[in-house]
Structure formats: C-alpha cells, structure tokens
Length: 198
Image (cartoon, rainbow, N blue to C red; front, side):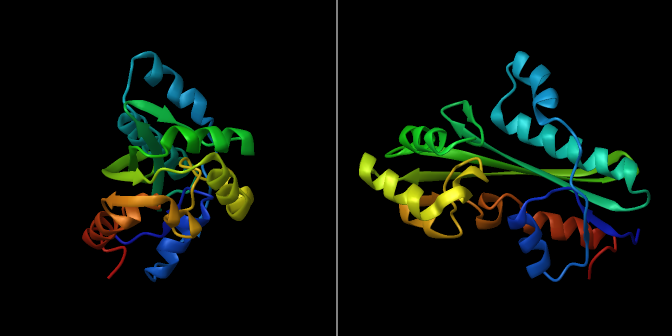
C-alpha cells in the first residue's frame, strides 16, 4: 500500500520528529473532544495507558474518515503517577501543582500511536517510559516555570524534556521518542511494511 501520510496532531514535537526523520506528510489535527472519548473509559476504571491507546485510535480514525486513502497517524500521551492520570495544565498555578506532585518521585509516560486508513485503525503501538524527577524546592520549581514559560502548558508532564526540562530529572528509563510523544521506531517500521516510506 503506497499512500499519502497525514499526521492527525497539532503537536509541534510530533511534527518535528516526523520531519527530522525525512517523512513527507500533511498535518490535519483531529477534530474530537478528548474528554468525551475519555469519559466512558474513566467510568470503567481504564488505566492511563488504555486511555492513551483509545485517544490515539480515535484521532487517527476521525481524520482518516475525512482524508480518504491516506495513512493517518494518531498519537496520544498520558502521565501515570501511581495509577493516577495527569492531564495538561491550563494555568501556571496548575503546572506548579503538577510539578510539586512529581518532584522526588518516579512517574510513567505512556505514548500510543495508531495508523488508520479510511476510518479503520490498521495498527497501534504503546510505549511506556519511567522518569524520576530529582527533589526540588518550591523556589526551584518557580524558577523552572519562569524559564519554560507558556510551554509548560503544552505537554502533559509540564516539563519540556527536549529543552531545559531535562534539568529536572535524575533518571530516565525508556525510549526518548516515546517520551517526546511519538514512538518513532515502531511507527517507521510499520510505514515501511506498508510501502509508505523507504
């Protein structure tokens, strides 16, 4: 199958990862209410990992129904702190509270990616990483948020690991690309198997 590739995400990090890998693709963000997709999953007690997979599937399928014939990549990432799901912060105060819950502890990031074609999910993959944040004082958290700025509101973990956020951590176990929100190596292998990339 040789098809156009479409990224169903407005994420600059995901777009950069695909572009840096030399892929030719279009961007068509998914038009769905993530909270509506999550609600029945949360009611059933779904894990943060399960929610990431469901959202990646939903994004890929929604866009692939609009972009006929394309291979559509959907992705999502959830933060798992002892089974409790973290979400993107809406304000700097929420970002500060999120960091305070993470300092000196380990948490997991679950990154899911799915590929859909004409409304049907053909493939999916879940990758998880464990990150241990070093102990930080409230003053250090505030200084970090001043440096990161509004970017803190763009990712589920608040920190920007690919930038200054790396300074917050003492240990990371897992795939770097998955931590950035897109398990790139399995995705590229799937796209190769479909003849979409070399």
